[in-house]
View (tube, rainbow, N blue to C red):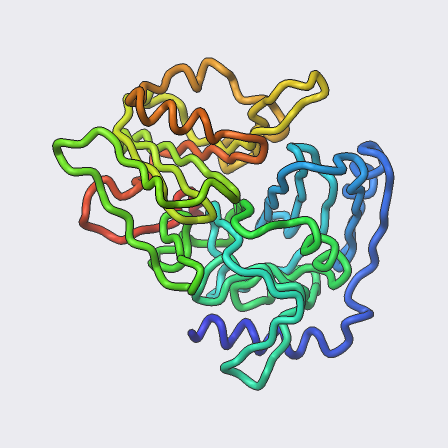
Length: 329
């Protein structure tokens, strides 16, 4: 709650002159976007949505560079300067899902403070939204974006969409409310998963509608695979997983050849993988129960996100749920 109030306080002051928050540029080619992105000043942004007019959207926030990169169908369509959490109020790193969207969000707990084009990442007050951009981390945990850029981004993202926050300025989220393994229901309450018993190999909740963003989480330490739909756990299985898979985030999209490809996002330690295709052999290293594999295969479509990590996905009942992917100082 203190994080939320502090974030709202900073937003109320920063948005007193919304029209002057940023200077932006719209370009029409990948080359123009790359050139413009190399010379962004605080408050600047560049936007080229026509490069990839349709497909799943992934947001990558780099705390070290104080930049946000927007990918659609695995292609970079926008870059913006940001301002993230200052020392003592660091923006948490990790892989998050968009829990709530509100273009005209105002606080119900503190003086009706505005958070325009809010896209909530955690229920304890971390979100993407329009805010002040001084050129360095100054927020109280949120990711501040230029006003117009925040509006453009808001129009193309969806509930359950993937946001990756990486860099050296943050700290892992360790609250029950924040990460991808702390899903919430439509009323904002926490959904508690049912772990596998010793006699089970897999479980699938067929009551969950097959609609909305699908995320697949692979834990090499737990030898588990977890499937989330709209942030809610729908399936879990024991698996045989090669421990040398490493840490990867990939999104399925259709390439120029008309075939689906897993496109990687640059995460800590693997920054050079960004926009490259995931090695198909890596997926063949997985060994899943046949029934679970069939259910999963039938539901994997364009926009599905795969997260591979050594972090725990709650194979045991003890210990806190936490952000799946973390970058430490």
